[in-house]
Length: 179
Image (cartoon, rainbow, N blue to C red; front, side, top):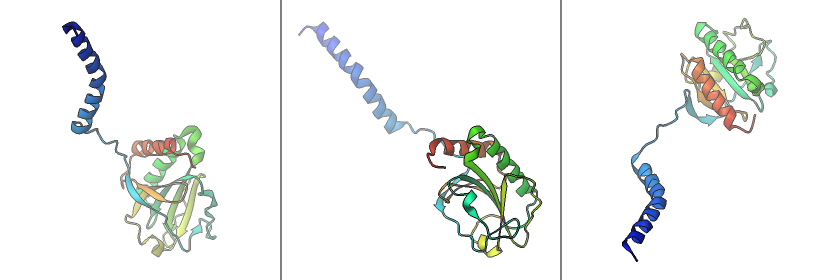
C-alpha cells in the first residue's frame, strides 16, 4: 500500500471517529448547564382537605379541578397584599397561556376563620378549609402548581415573579399530554 493511500485511509477513519471521540470527551469533561425551573420541585403529594367548603359555605365540589392544571394559592389567614399579588400573577399567568388557558384553573384555599370572599375574579375558584387542614403546609402564603391528577408538584417563592411562573407552567403544559 502506498504512503498516500495510507494517509487517505487514516484521514477517512479519523473523519468518522472524530464525532464519537468528541462526544466521549464532552460527556467526560463538560458539564451542561442545568435547566432549572423557577419554582421548587416537590416530592408530589395529594393534599387531603377535610371539611372543605366553597366560597358560599357549601361542601366543596372539586370537579372543576379534575383533569386540569391548577395554580393553587394557599393562605393561612386572610388574603392580604402578598396573597393578592400572588393571585394577580396567577391570573396573568393563566391569561398569558393563550389558547392553552382552558387547561389551567386558578384556585385559592383559605382557612375558615379568616375567609375573605372579597377577592374579585370570576375565574378564581375560592375554597375554605379548617385551620387544621393547612397545618402540614409549610408556608403562610404560597402558590403551588397541581397536576391534572391532583398532585402538588411545584412551589413558587413567597415573593414570586410572574415571568418565572409563566415559564414553568408553559414548560409543563408543553410537555404534558394530560390536562
